[in-house]
Length: 109
Image 1 (cartoon, rainbow, N blue to C red):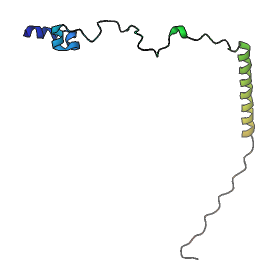
Image 2 (cartoon, helix red, strand yellow):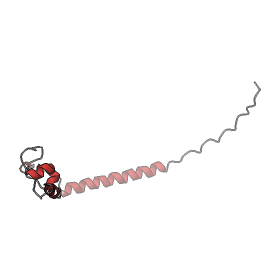
Image 3 (tube, rainbow, N blue to C red):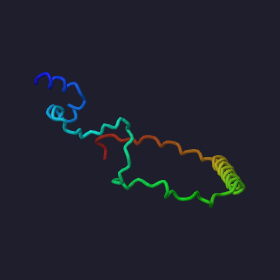
Image 4 (cartoon, helix red, strand yellow):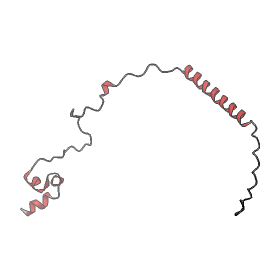
């Protein structure tokens, strides 16, 4: 009998069902399927069905519309750069000179 326990400790089945389950032949709670892919049982319905994929969108813009939008964006960028250059060209007045430190002496009132 000790020989049987020693041999069953070497199998994966003993890890799944324990030593007594491996000797008595209890079915393993772990699947014997070697593939990592499990069959769909219908228990999980939160995954979408590929048959319910919506059709491709039809309201896509044309090449001409996209080119027109890109041209408008380029014009906006150029106008923004011109405004920046004009703003930076405005002369900034010279700052006022720093006033001298006040003559504060302790004890004088």
